Amino acid sequence: MSRTFLVVAETRGGSLRQVSCETISAARLAGGADTTVAAILIGATTSAFVNELAQYGADRVYTIDHADLEHYNPQAYFAALQAVVQTVQPDAIFLGHTAIGKDLAPQIAAELGAGQISDITAIEVDNNGQALFSRPIYAGKVLEKKAFTAFPWIVTVRPNNIAPLEVDPTRTATTEAIAYSQPALQTIIRDVVRNTSGKIDLSEAKVIISGGRGVRSADGFKPLEELAAVLGGAVGASRGACDAGYCDYALQIGQTGKVVTPELYIACGISGAIQHVAGMSSSRVIIAINKDPEAPIFKIADYGIVGDLFEVVPLLTEQFKLALQP
Image 1 (cartoon, rainbow, N blue to C red):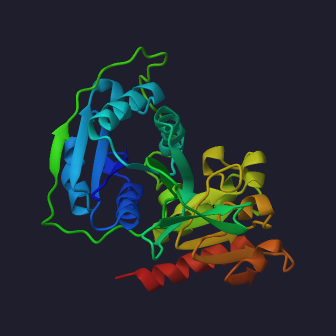
Image 2: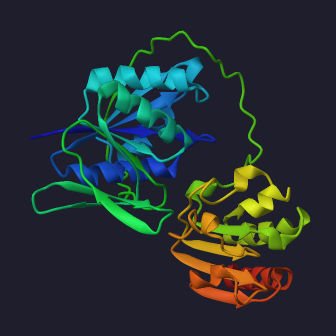
Image 3: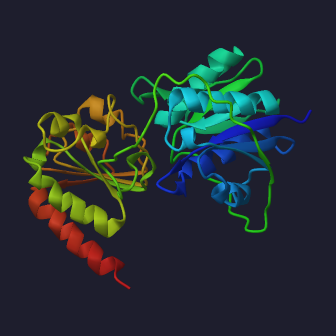
């Protein structure tokens, strides 16, 4: 029986977010060959991303354009999503496990009376064709596998875990514009000021250089920023560094911050408290730099360097410059 899975795509800074492409792939994996994967674009100028979504595997793309949707507003976006759901009647809705996805998913689940599985990191299909969703629990110490017993499904996908489909430049998708019926808004977003403007989003970064209390000051992040610039990565921080006022809480990684899964995570001056480890333990490769050879971070690190980060990080930066130069 053919089914339709709907993917809620997101844009950021004038580009399609990588997690949207990964979510299309997740919907394909869970639904199989007979499933139609449709994507929805909500915003003020969505038409620019239709072809990109098609090339990443979307069969249909629904767009909702309105000035109210230029910036994320929970009421406005939920009303737009409801309009598409009423039109499409999807069997499942897939969203990125992002700030927007985590906000919208429970609302639409409650509206539809649907089951929800959040923060999935892998999908497999058993011999009976049942999709099994893996998700970390207990601060990442355990992976559980869950399955739905009935449709519709609501699923959120953790960024950087499910590889997007290979881009097919020849692939096209049917498109349909959906009318937006403005709800009675209690809040209107006039403008958004981002204090990390121009920097890579932590949740989607392939390389993260993270600092802890060992950086000792706000200036202590400068060597980390230089290394991140060379590697095309992002800078993160432990809660200890944020609490000490060395950096903004927007950079916090951990149980009460962002959960990240980069290809490379370099922890500089971070002891390795369980609260921090919960946010980065799924990184592909972990390198720890710490003066204390007994620091807990070394227990989970793939590679460890015992030394002063202010000596080690500049040396790494110079070596990477030499290795990566044309």
